Image 1: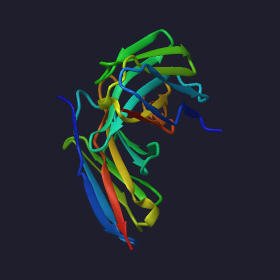
Image 2: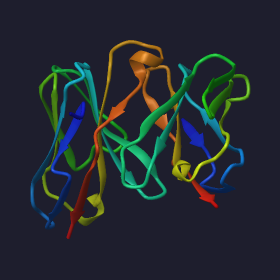
Image 3: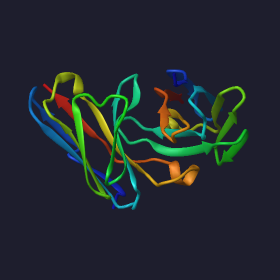
Length: 109
Length: 116
């Protein structure tokens, strides 16, 4: 079966760095997405990886290892507005997105 | 103006009633999706459509039906609402093809549905 695993909740301090991990099992693989979702709002696109390695975009970076079925989202210089849920989604062989349940990130001052 | 809109934004209904949630998009995308989101369960796909003549069941289609009236419009119906259909419903769109730019899904603001 297809499955996406990520931690349910994480807590970090303002100004610090946090890494949110995601492991995936999909039928075929055509990339991995990270989305941000503030409470009660729509998910918004953060990053997409299809090749191994790290992609950096400002304070946010996303890493992929296809051989390990593993990705992480790295958030630097955390701000209070980064408090949100972070959704990992793998793209299967039919180009369908398989969604994880999301990681709720709590930022403390 | 928002690229993906949903109406209504909030709805309270009673068990057994038929209701319709509507989604419109101005992004010109071919693909449209309906998801529901429940606390702790993430997004679950209800139905999706790759073009006006193409409708596909998702993971949890029982109790739901859809209509793709035009490229820009995709409606979700609950034929006879039940309390466990209380959830946050999202419509999303994506373009056709593969790769980041074409597979990224863009979400509407969501509809909060409460079935009493």
